[in-house]
Length: 202
Image (cartoon, rainbow, N blue to C red; front, side, top):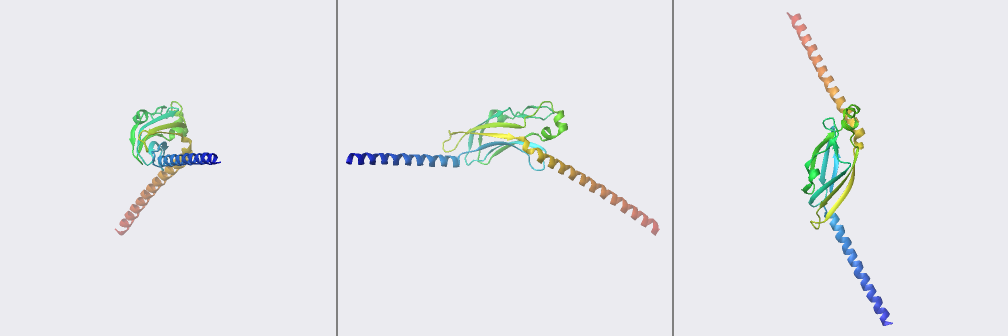
């Protein structure tokens, strides 16, 4: 019947409209994710060093605004041989904005406060080896779009790297000291040979 065909046609049209709207929403969401800011927070130890740095970086493609941080447990440091809250203004009060690729890097702690037995024994208090950090910020297609990410910062990943680097640095220092001592010995021998030759000539 014509009425059934008309109803079926109306249903198909409605379904087509719904699919088109869904496709547009997915495209818009994908585009939003592609150009959205993406702020991460992590702890870094540059190769060859013994100092840990706390780093905040926008790895996204647009400016991130109103950046806030929440740590569980509270972020702590061991400077001064005691465990205490890591007091940095931008972590407490937030960051007004970070451009794409921009980062903030501050000295966080000494690696020995976590992995060196002597340093850990001297430390008053226990430092957490892992933190969960929640970062919230705005930006993207719409400046007021709110984004949130949650990460785990695990300091135990530096354990064996730190031992290897510490050993390498100590070995290098010993090698340089040994080389300097050898040079001094060679110089003394040359002076003695020169004196002997001069005495023999006279």
